Picture 1 (cartoon, rainbow, N blue to C red):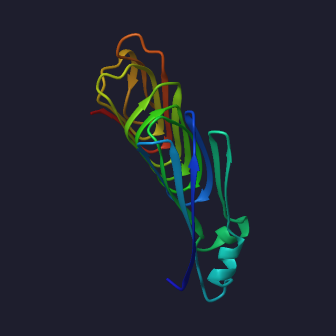
Picture 2: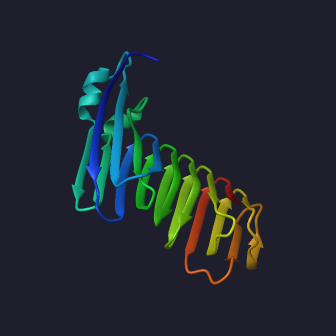
Picture 3: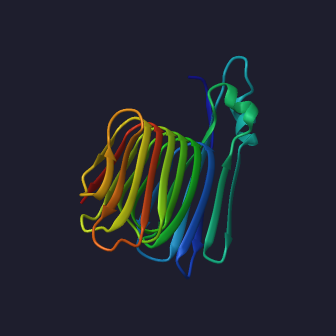
Length: 219
C-alpha cells in the first residue's frame, strides 16, 4: 500500500440566513449531517500515498488544493487533485460537514461517495463515479440527484408530496411511494418512473443514474 501523508483542515462558519453550501471535489467522499444552530463546520482530510516509481506522498500532498470561503451565508468548498496525479493510486480529499438542518446544497463529486442526512432544503447533487445516499431529507424546492456510475438511495417522509422523474439507463428503480399517473417501467434498460406523489406537489424531484440502481423509500 505504501506510505501515506495527510493534512487535516478544519473551519467553522457562522451563518445568519438559510445556509447555501457549494462543494466541488475531484476525488474523495463527502458526508453532510444536519444539526441544530446556525453554524457550518467543515473538516477536510487530504491524503496521498507513495509508490516506488512515483513522487513521494508529501510531494503529492503539497499539490492538493483545499479552499473554503464564505460570502454572507454562502459557503464555497473545493478539493482539487491535479490531473497528473490521477494516473496511479489517486490522492483524495475526504470531507465531513455539520450544517444547519435548513440548508441548500450544491455538490459535484467526480469520484467518491456522498452521504447526506437530516436536512431540509434544495439539493443539486451530482457524482460521476460513486454512490449517493440521502437519508431523512425533505426537499422543499426542486431538487436533483445524478450519478453516472453508482447507486442512489433516498429516504423521505411518507407524507411527502412531489413530482417524480426517475430514470436509470442501465439498472433498476425501486420506489416505495405510490406514484399516480405514472409512466412506469422500473426494470431493465431505460428504466423509468414518472408521476405524482402525494397531493398538490410543488416540488420536482429528479433522480438519474446512467449505470446503477435507484431506491426511493419513506420513513
